[in-house]
Image (tube, rainbow, N blue to C red):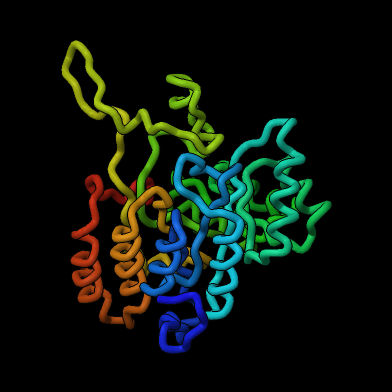
Length: 305
C-alpha cells in the first residue's frame, strides 16, 4: 500500500469478468482510509476538501493530499470522486468556483454536487468536470433523474428512501448512471432536507456540519430511548440482486469512520460482488464474518425491505 509507484505495492485490481458488476465505491475521510479502500478492492473512493462538503467536521483532505490520491488512483486504474455537495450562500459562489478551478488541474473522475447554482457554474465555466448529483439533491424518481440529465449530470446518487420497486422504475425510464447506498448510517430525515441539527444549535447538516442529534438519548414522561436513531443500513445479502439492477455504483457511507471500519466493510462487499453464481450463500456467511468486527448499530435493510 504505497503511493510511490512501486509495482510490488500496487494492490490487485478487482475482478472484472462480469460486465454487469457495479462499481464498489468507498468512503475516504483520510488519505490512509483511501489507500486501505483501494487495497481491499474498492473501484473508487469519494473524499472531500475542507470546504463545501457534507462532512466538513471531519479531517478531510488538503489540496496536496487530494492531488496525490487522484494521481495514485489513476496509476492503478481506480477512481476518485470529490465532494462539493452542500448548499452554497450567495457570498460563497466565488470561493466554490476557485476550488473547482483547482480541481480541473487535479483531474478527479467526478465532482459530487448538491447546489443547483453550483451545477450551473461548473457546467458553464468548467465543462471538463464530470458531475454526479449528490443524494443531498433528494432525487428519488424517474422525472428527477431525467431532469438531472438535462442540467448536465452524468450520474445521480439516489435517496436512501428509494425502494427496490422505485429503483426498477427509475432504471427502466432513464439511462443516467445510478448510484445507491448499500451500507452505513441512516438518517431519520430526508436526505438533504433535515433541519434537526440546525434547529437545535445552528449546525446545519445540509452545510456539512451535522451534530447528529438523532443519535442522542431522549427523555419523556413515558420513558427514554434513542427515538430518532434508526439502525445501520446493510444490503450485503441483496448484492446478487443489486448486481442485476442496472446500478453503476454501490456506495458505502462512512467518511467519519476509522480506517479499520473501511477495511472490514470494503472487504466484505468486494467478497460478495466477486462471488460466483451459485456460491453466494457461502460468500454471504464469509462476508458477514468480515463485518462482525465493525462497530455500529443493528443492521437493517432500510426502505428496501
